[in-house]
Structures are given as structure tokens and as C-alpha cells.
Figure 1 (cartoon, helix red, strand yellow):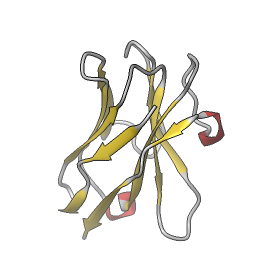
Figure 2 (figure 1 turned 135 degrees about the vertical axis):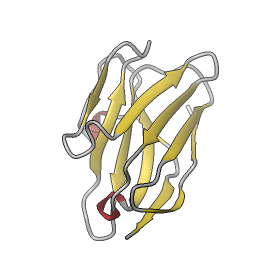
Figure 3 (figure 1 turned 120 degrees about the vertical axis):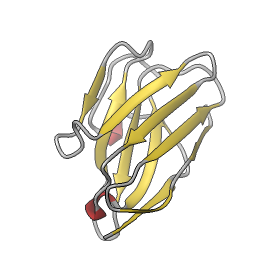
Figure 4 (figure 1 turned 120 degrees about the horizontal axis):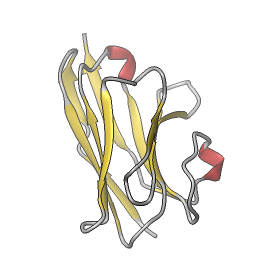
Length: 120
């Protein structure tokens, strides 16, 4: 499975972005992670294979929304009320099996990442 993330950019605090992750084929659970310079990779959100269930990191709950369009093999991350601390490279990931996870080691496929920079 190949994943292609896009949609990042430079935005002012309080702004919004929508990230997309296009998969080369149908996937099971998918997730978004982020990594800021000098920090460890951090879980952001995950969605089940059919999109009926989602989980979020506490730091983004209420501001970020993950969704998917299985007809397009694409997962989205709507990011609202952006803060400077949201600045990071955002990665999408997919699992070979069912079951959402907050742990990056449980994901089998990774996209190349898309940079999100939030200015204050």
C-alpha cells in the first residue's frame, strides 16, 4: 500500500487546513501522526476501516476531525483553530488489520509526510 499525504502549508494561528492521504488501495484502520523538530512522533487521530469509529489525542480533540472516503481510498484530517504548537510534519499511516491504534509501531504503511507550519 502506498500513501500520499498532501494539504500542508503555512497558516496563521486560528486558521484551518485540510490534509489528505490518498492510498493506492483499500485499507483498514488509518491514522495521522505528527512530529515536531526535536520531538518524538505523536499520535493525532485514527479512524476505523468503515469510518464509523474515531479516536483523537486529547491535545487536538474538538479542533481536528478525521474522516475517510472509501470510494476514493482517501483519509482526511480537518484541522481548525490552529495553534503554533501544531507545527509539525504530519504523517498518515495505515494498518494491515482491523483495529484503531494510538501506537505508531502498530501501523504498517506510512506516507511521506506533509509540513504544517502555524505562525503566531
